[in-house]
Image 1 (cartoon, one colour):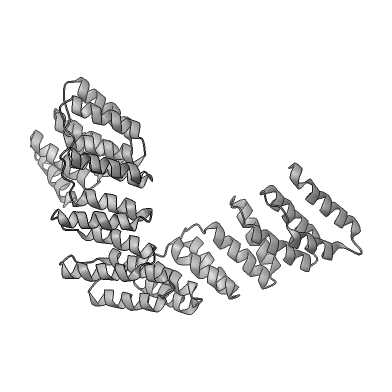
Image 2 (cartoon, rainbow, N blue to C red):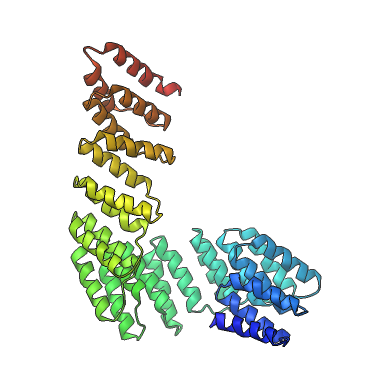
Length: 437
């Protein structure tokens, strides 16, 4: 629809028509609403070529477009320029810029803008305070959010479902489910009907606390109230069941989700892959992975990480490396823990050459191996009599801030004592130097 609107505008221009100010502003507003700033600036340039004289609404949309792109300095400078010219943008423009500063936890700027809009006669509405609440909650300032929420009610503001949902999300994120429950019932008492997002937030909170019965009760309530759950709702419950190692129940819920006409997304598949791997059932996990591919979805880093880890634990290094190389072909960047798993896995299969190649790849990629990775690799190298390589790895271990433990020291002692006392002396001199580094 948006592209069609832009095409129509360009056709009008091509026929020699000059659109009215109202038409131009409506098009700009539409582009801002759907976050199509890529088209916004091109259309604005075309509008200027028509000899279009911008009004306060136009500047408001320009400020909002800057905000959508995260260009807050430019947005603030343009706002100041508009105000200096005697114009006052509408509350939607102020809400957009206040919301962006709130999300970045720049609350001093938020306070300045609030006072500024009031001084200019543009009164904050409930949406203004909702975006501030959202910023407070997302930045871990839930207590301040609760204070602001109570203050709003005392000053006569009527929080809507969106406002309640923002605060519910903040409370659930910090595990305050009792307070979230009280807020939930308060919302009902005020005659407000929770929407899909409200339910998703509360279900997520209960699932993360391990209260799956309450999460599933809320799912049933959604259907009873005619609030259709979506894929996100089911994903949340599936993830909660997987956290409790109830992978078979999670799989059953997935089937119910499909029966309801909902489709799995990448998160559904990744959650089940992780769940099966957590159970040690890599074959089922690989089945889910293949289903993902058959659906035409592109795997993510989260698809591969648990699979490679479990394959390494089971000693299936060829399969693990196949998936690792597939990640690289898809231009996905494996996590540091994936490299750790592969180094340790190769060591446990006595494939020291591959272990060292993966270890060196980590260092070249500026990844920090885990302490266990150093320990296992040193033990494997010592076991193969590759003392020089083991000492090199020890140097890297110390360089990365780790202290060799008893196991590493014993490993060198057992390997070097006897014929190679000189190397033993060198090794322990390095260990003794650690506190001075």
